[in-house]
Length: 575
View (spheres, one colour):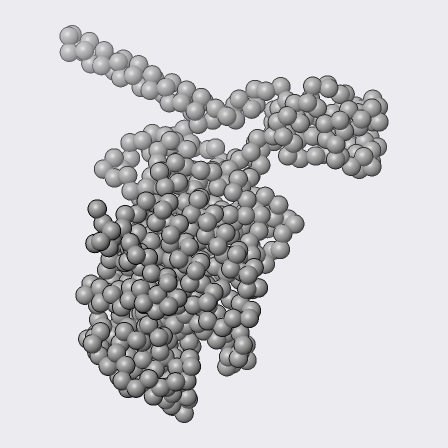
């Protein structure tokens, strides 16, 4: 008897506890998860109780202190509509409404008011809280004030091409169309179904791990690594460069080379996603992942590291520089056509010598050079979490001719996306390993659970000794050659290289007076916090990247050092 009684008592206790948990969870969702929507529905202004408020997850920037800042969110306001048949005097109604909405088109309003056979005419969307409440307070017959919620982008033009927009798709449903809005549409889209059950699934599932693959998360907010202040500074610099030189396009990326987290990325010109209907749609895409460029001499840093890693050259190797040479009937020359005689490897980077890069390529041989370049991912997508990514074009490295490998060694004849380029260069700042560039760091699910995202393990391409030697050489470039030595930061080691490439003509060959300028660098050089890639396409009135991008790079470097309080790494300045 006692055993049976105890068993029944346990069952009753279990049912009571389960019911209590159910009620607690239900209250959690009513008050916390869905509290805002229920509050909006409870307001008298939300007269259409059958209307479903637009719902979508948010996208967040992350400040350096971990604070989340809205990049894409929902704004609450009101919609103004009228029922012409129920309106007593359209002129009086117009007068009252116009006292709040001073820019209201009177002719359009009166035309809508004349449609007495239509019970619902929308007059104005996206009214502010104050406007909606003021009009509702008039209590005008036939005037309808309804709750409305719409997508807004508090940062405006900042990171617009990365964040993206939402718009109607071919199925007449609202969906992400560009950027993170599109890539994570399946996460950001909230249908409100199954969320209650998901609370328990997310709370108790996978307790041994809080890290998930990016594609397994669902229904929530996207937390990114984009730092809003760094993003704003980058875009300010890009705009200044582009306007100063009349460039067709200027872009840049700041990345943590160890993790692949993108701190800032952008191009100029951009657009305002809050008013994209009136913007140039050509600016909606993201050239950083959707366009290929021949980057020029910043590729020499990779060629040099490949040669050092393969053991075909060292920093003490010399070659005979003749100024020009012919390979497979094609003439290759240094930028100034000048011969320099016996030259050490350091000068290949310091003076940006095409013949020096060609010397390394010939020593590497076709197979080894191709192997290094493909291992760096130059012919594949990086896997960044942005839509429409394309891969680089290095088909010239399938050729049996030496000349194709020679031109590739100094960044001509092969074309990469900017995100591919910074990933490849990132191996120099990450001990010889490449990582997956990415923006999202976590998904904050509707249940309240935050899931960190996993982006895979680094892939080794170069040995650490080769990378260290190459870094020494790139630091020497900054300390002694860049800007005649004026770019040197006394307290901080910075490794960097400029690049100038001729623009390829559509019918083959190259334009004589159109250039693509690029610049990359990382710091502190021996324990890098950041790697930066800058470029500007077709600047006017100036030929070399050292003239257009050196100062912007140094300004951005100083900003990041100060903003992130990066301590000095040179012995005489270290505490």
